[in-house]
Image 1 (cartoon, rainbow, N blue to C red):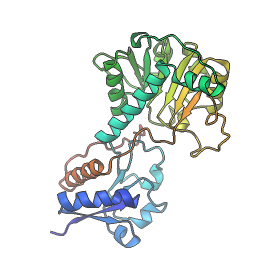
Image 2 (image 1 turned 90 degrees about the vertical axis):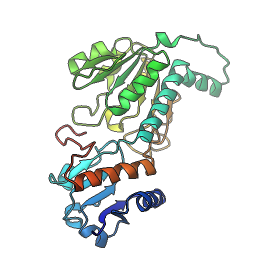
Image 3 (image 1 turned 90 degrees about the horizontal axis):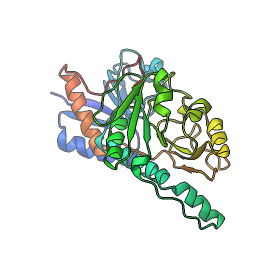
Image 4 (image 1 turned 135 degrees about the horizontal axis):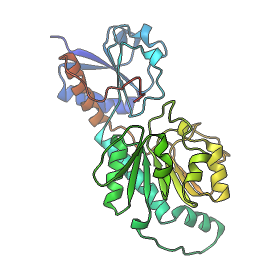
Length: 310
């Protein structure tokens, strides 16, 4: 039996790792780099940015494997309803996201943004050291990443609560669901972490009204998408003291201009969309398992529900 072709369209350096894993562990599958000739008859595509003319380039396409957990950058119309869209849920991606969220929350808990600002100004000013037990963390989004971050934060002694669109039950975590529950969820939250998928319902959710529901001096951590944040509202909240700091791994425009109001703000720590990344070897193994299951008529994990957007 000829190997099943899987087309890879992404970074060549990471692709070398993919080729090594496929060669060593999946002789029944043939991983080939993107070319019009290779794509024409293939049923499987691995990509972050598929070609704009996907339906014409890959008329036989059955499954598109997205090289990340978020799929908001992909157009359902361009992909086609007959194509299954699978998002990447990589244990290494989860671990790196948890590391980043811990880093950001601990920085806010121990006033690191304020100390960095003071150092820039030449000020030596000690601030009170607070207990983790007095610093409530709220997590918007209780998917795989949100649940993992919540568990890690709770393990450090932070009171953690989570909000999601639909009800979730998580041991040791107070949970809230639906827009009507947002004010109660936000009350008393000292660090708010956004890990939501970007959908029509969540776009612009981080706005002035939401910031007003947080206690004065709270901090924001956005590791979702730039589209979740109304940037002008955050700048105003930081300037007024409503929020003390923000850690942003995503912005609406990436990269931002050097003079971007948030990128250049003294109370903002901004990183270039590096909170988590898919590890090529574990991602390749995830795709191998999914292709084999699809080939054998079995259900695949992490298939995106197009009606929900994740």
